[in-house]
Amino acid sequence: MSDFDNDLVSQPHDAFFKDFFSDLGQATGFFQGHLPQEMAACVRWDSLDLVPGSFVKRSLQQAHSDLLFSAQTKGDRKALLYLLFEHQTSVDPAMPLRLLAYQVEILLAHFNKHGLPLPLIVCYVLHQGPDRWTVSTAFEDLFQLSESETSVFEEYLPRFRHVLLDLTQIDPDVPENEAPLRVVLQLMKLARERQLLTFFEWLMKHFEDWAHQLSGPFLRKTVLYALHSDSDLDVESIAHTLTEAPELRETIMSVAEKLIAKGRAEGLAEGRAEGLAEGRAEGETRGALIGNVRLWEKMMGLDVTSEKVFEKLGVEELEELLRKLEERYEAEFGR
Image 1 (tube, rainbow, N blue to C red):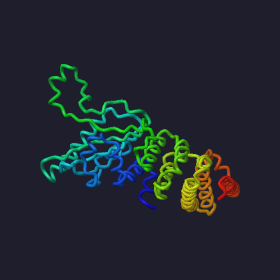
Image 2: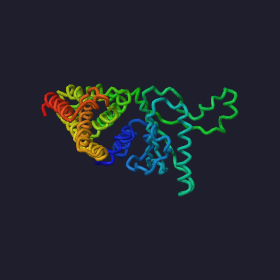
Image 3: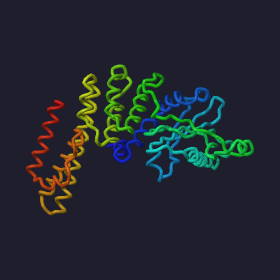
Image 4: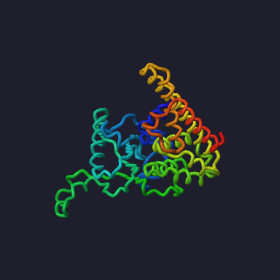
């Protein structure tokens, strides 16, 4: 299993963001389309490169992910594009202060290695939501100075603002973006809003026109992210919406089946551990059956059976429950 698949289990938003935007072609298209036009025109995009490492503190990694890119301006100055993915549940009014701290770390690292002059840094915040971004993007606004105070102190304060893309406000049908970027931004938006059925309905409408741009590996990662970002996602309902996009339907069912197969193996391993602990073979069998039943129920969008109910079921009853789930799956999807 790849690092991407493993990372999706614990941090699906972070893994999907980094996997997509670490691709220099996708990052270039994003910055060219979403930086201010006059700024984008100053950058030599063929010089864009990804700088390894992260400047987000470990304690904040659940809420923020980051990527740092280097490039040359057309005037041969070094520029750093700092892309911060903000996926916490509320808007951060202190974001400019946080970005200042990251900039200082980046600039100090550069100074210690290369000395002066310092590189240009442009900070870009990609906000996933779910709330609209309503606070200022300017660092100086954090001081809330009066008009008279501003006239006295303004020139002594650090001044910068960050670029912002608020996913809650994007229009996915604006044609400036290439299809993969449009898909990713819309998916990240609707994943946070837990409206993934709406996402797949939207994707199906465009799929015939975009299919040549959306590779098999890209679709697989898209589906994996969707399934991991919402454990209650009803795969059965999604498949029913994709009747006019058989390739997309095939992808989601293939990914779902592989996850089920993985769950079977994990359930068997869990069952073996339980069987050894209890000292009898029945524990191994029951553990495997319960693990499989739970996974099938989740993948089909059904209510997950409670632990109290499982305690009352014997091996034969669990086998019958699993058989009925598999038969329902075969009947629904004809596979």
